[in-house]
Image (cartoon, rainbow, N blue to C red; front, side, top):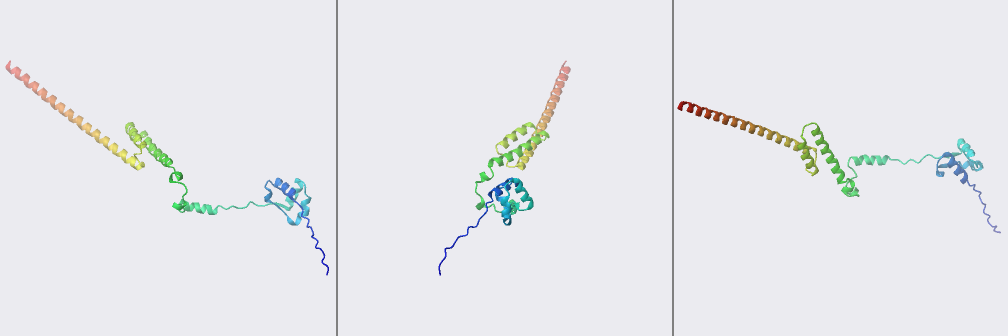
Amino acid sequence: AVMLPRVKTKSTMVSLRLQKRLAASVLKCGERKIWLDPNEINEISLANSRRNVAKLHRDGLIIKKPTVVHSRARVTLRNEAKRKGRHTGIGKRRGTANARLPFKVLWMRRIRVLRRLLKKMRDAKKIDKHIHHSLYMLAKGNQFKNKRVLLETIHEMKSVKVKEKALAEQASARKGRAKARIDRRSQRDAKKEADADAETN
């Protein structure tokens, strides 16, 4: 038997690069989003203008593929769990404590809360400007770790001031009574002397 040489039949593949480029331009998307109907290759290959490509799109031979869904459902679930405090242990942390939540930010939050409270109390005439200033400087010196401690200090200072005022009033009243007593005694003594002088004369 004589072996005949095998003849390779060359399959003619039509290039549709032009049509894909035109379709991408007409449909305002990338070339990777263009679908060309593989059963209608010959008809599509004849389209050499944007108008022809648009007609093929209307006929359904050229389609713009839908956008690929990149779901965030798993991310949402994980974020909800993180809000509860899951997945945030030592092994999940990459930055230092200061990098994750800067100390300065914590300080700013705290000092703003304290200063806002002091201003509100001063404007409401609950504390005078002297107490306000002394407490303002103490807050600046990191004396109060939160609002509760500052309020306790304010109440203490106000009670001390009230006591001091009461003591001062008592002292002034005592001084007044003592002065009145001395005045009465001196008047009495002067009267006695005057009576004695009158008797001798």
